[in-house]
Length: 269
Image (tube, rainbow, N blue to C red):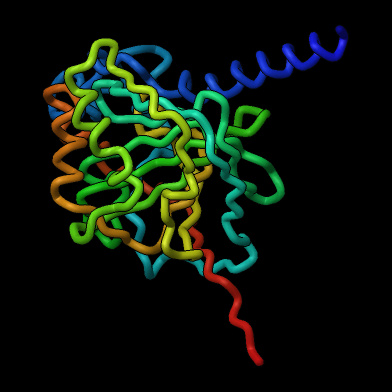
């Protein structure tokens, strides 16, 4: 009996913990906008007291990654993924499309700390730019540690061959636009199908890119730019609510932050 109670408590605690990542990001898209205007990005910090960091924060995201300024730092270590298949739900949050793993789907380790994968979502166009160039799509894999620390992996895409992970979800993405409530059970989804394509990545400390723009987020932007089809990007844009087809926050000032580049150490014979 005691073991059953303990197991139930652990399961309930895990659910609360995983739900915590979603609560870090705003869910009601009617409260903010991406286009210029009184609810646009330049005014997010004025809309609510708890959003003031969007306006006065000094470590905000996204940023423009300038390659020549990145410091090569092989000691950062590989992004060690410990993902596994788990039940997931596709959700239309109005301002973006999200895959939510309600029971957790493994995670990653950064500097010996475990971060649990909670959800991924897409931005069109990409939020992070590289040497000033903006690509058509970016996915964010949002993780959280037991102490509340958030780590996000970002993958940027250019137009080309279809993305294999999005290909798995295309029917559901196209259907979810007209659903009420706007969610669709996906069954088992394996996040390892989200391909990185490179062990190299940029690392910096920033923030969430939607209100409340919480800072202290560990960002890992994959070095390789992968490919996505125009039809896949259009499906994501068609699914969100009107006015959110372009849901990328403008680049934020770097303010002296260091951007590191992890590149594997060369092995010599």
